[in-house]
Image (spheres, rainbow, N blue to C red):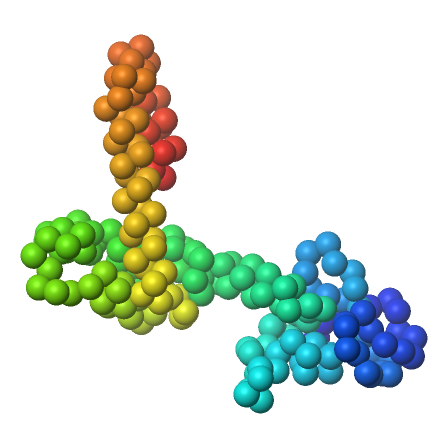
Amino acid sequence: MATEHEDQSVGKCKVQGCKSTATLKFVCSMEDCDRSVHYHCYKHLFLKKADGTFHPNLDETDVACTKAHYTAVVKARSSSKGLRGNWLNDAKDGGPCSMDIVLVWWETPPNFGKFRGKDNDGMKKSEYGNMLATQMNTLTESTERTGKHVVQKIRDMHDQWNSAHEFAVSETGAGMLASDDKKTFNEIVLKHFP
């Protein structure tokens, strides 16, 4: 269960709208937040949606004192567990990670050209993203990857590649290649496209 707060006096917790008089309070799981919260307040003021259903609970060791803290804790926990944010470390049982799936797709002609709109038979970017997201959610530990996330990742990778390419062929890149050894040059270019 979550860490008990040192303030176990009868009374309200630090959550706006608290009507509880329970003594058992817990520490908010947001980093550097030490506000107290009743579990009932966390459950019914933050997790309950307007339609009466609930947002997913945090781990049993976590509670939050505001909706913003709930969202931040969810994001922090999900990226460390490979739910959405971790593209390199979400492989399941020695299988591919999400980045491997994107790169294999990217390097297989004519996928990227079609993604960019060349002879794509009317297939939209979102359809490619949904296809890849389905593969990732099946083959990796990622469970919440969407087509929108995949399309944005492909765009970001393409932008990074363009930036690294422009640097490598620019006067600065060419001058660095002439003055430094190739290993240093490659390391510098890789900083632009990790």
